[in-house]
Amino acid sequence: MTDRLLSLLLFGIAYLSGVAAILILFVGFIDWLQTGSWSNLSVLELGYNAHLLKARWFLDHQWSWWMHDVLHWIPVYAFLLGFAPLAWLFGAWMARR
Image (tube, rainbow, N blue to C red; front, side, top):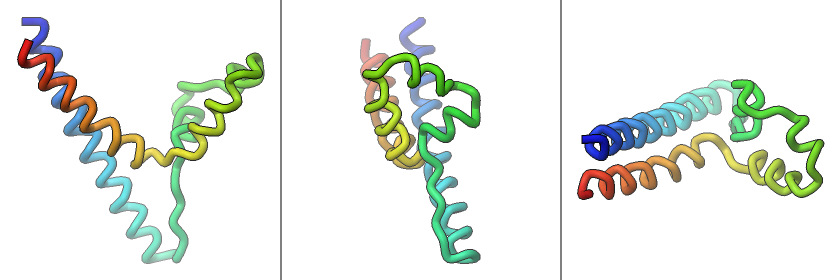
């Protein structure tokens, strides 16, 4: 029973991630049509804006700067488009168990 609930939760997360990525791309396209510039929100900026990440974590440890740079390079829609199939596959694996 727990595997079934977890698989349904993962299917829902995958679906919402895909829809959110498509909506972010659509809004970015509309913004590009109006202003001529495409602004990408990075995963790092989203983490800072949502108060999920703190700059102190990266400042305290020297080895974490590469993670800071990688999170800054990845746009949110690319992360969501990559995360959605992984969540779907893991949900399908949990449903078969």
